[in-house]
Structure formats: structure tokens, C-alpha cells
Length: 123
Image 1 (tube, rainbow, N blue to C red):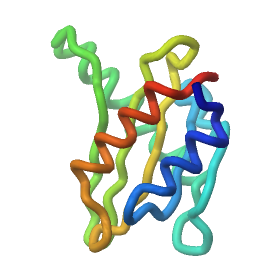
Image 2 (image 1 turned 60 degrees about the horizontal axis):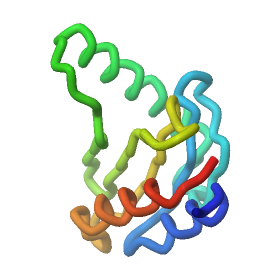
Image 3 (image 1 turned 90 degrees about the vertical axis):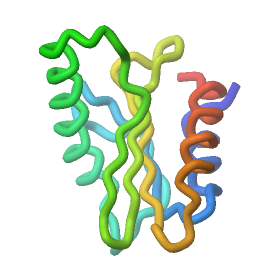
């Protein structure tokens, strides 16, 4: 089992990673961040993506699809933003956020690695 710091370090080891955060979407607060810098303020990204997650959860409930969101992908001109909702023990209401450089990232591998990080994360 990995703690928050270890999990975020593993996330930024993914090819093309710009930064990562563990976010509580009930409050919009980042519980941990790594990377980012001048090109990406991870605390602002955490708060903004909280709104995205909340809206998608509400939409799923209104549609009555009876399914859980695995991840949400936002594609930009130069970046991918990947949001992975956590479903493990003591992780309800949390998501992993990963920003990737689109030219250097393999999106399928990044999704696979985030799923593995989620499975090993212990809060």
C-alpha cells in the first residue's frame, strides 16, 4: 500500500506528466500536489476540476444510468487532463488529477498506470 506522497510521485513518473494532485471533491481542496509550476497551478486546477466532477456526478444521477465514473478526460491543444475518481476504502469523495503533455504522453498507458496507483493508494 502506498501513501499520498508516494502515489503522487508515481503519477508524475508517468511519461509526459506535468503535475498531479489528490483532491477532495467535497471541499475542492488538494490534499497533496506534485509538479505543475508556472505552467500549471495545481491548487487552482484542483478547485476547478472539482466543479467538473460534481457536475458529471449530478448528470449521472439525473440520467439514472446506475454506473460509476472511472475517469474523465479533458483534451486540450497541448495537454491531456485526466481525472480518476477513487473508489477504494476511505477514498470516497476523492480523485486523482493528472496533467500530461500531449506530445510526450501515451494516454492509454497513463490511464492504466493511474488505475494501478489507485489500487495501491491508502489514505
